[in-house]
Length: 431
Image (cartoon, rainbow, N blue to C red; front, side, top):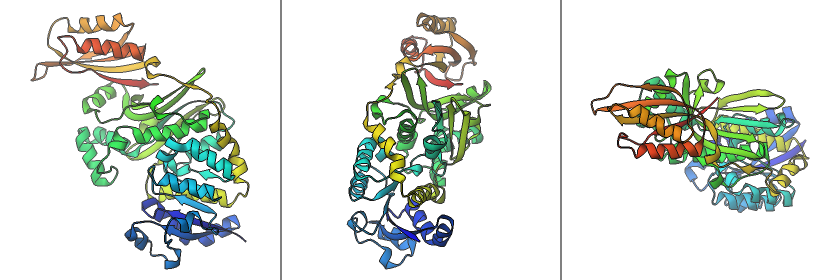
């Protein structure tokens, strides 16, 4: 029976789950695949993480070279995350002829082109199913199952922390701050949640999905990113009055010779499948010319759900001696000229939800409408709430499709009016 040796860098939550799975299911994999997948070495600078695995001392690597330069190891699994030193370890493993499996979305979004170039040069494979949406097979779905499709659009709830927060705000009728604190207590948010709530985690994942669907990694500065840290309960409540929910969406759309790549809070119909995705769960909604509308839904994080995707990549490599040839075209494509230009956010045409805080004065609505009309913006629906204790009136509108730059310019002008008490809130709508 053919034997494949695996070395793991990082014995934390996911790495520990992979190590335990390899040991516990060794005979199961051999029976199912006809290949022996053997855990050869594990390395982590955290000795407590290694001790928690309760593995034989012979399986503990003395240093990184004991894995990336070990001639006996066929597959290196990188699960430490971040750019450095992960990038150095991955490139070193590839240079030494090792296949690589990683869950590192930040690394791929930042240095994917360089990493793919090294994989191409070394004639080995790099697999990354766990880098996007944990246990959900979204990479395989786009790369293999939907390969015959011309992907028109993808909308994703790809960050469990943000989805948990917005769910709690709705179901517990609480503020963003209270929902975030709950997420921290439940372990769904880091002590410093900035990477998640500011949208950067979703941005990295969208970059990877875009590469698979449209051909190339893109420069992150060309992607529009807006997080949920300013999301307010009153906007969720107003949105639901009109039949919408608010989700942090990662959106990719192809229009003619350009693609839109954006991450931001979004109003989406309560009738849409994505609106039913609650708490820490993730989902990806795809529109293809052959499959039509399709959605995959499931656990976006967690030790064994994510380890399941890592194991799928290990098994893919172990069970297919021609794995490099299968992925070669992808590595080559990424090195070439981008297939599409990235659309600027100012050129976006979509519908909008806007909320104004104004003084209680006759003619306020007319003045706002006048500025909007001046910028070619048409109002679809409007409601006005009674003044509050602070003598503030809330005006909420749904806007027909308009150009983003026109909306931005109009809101800047409205914000300067004497009747305006706070900066207007604008949230995009997806149908």
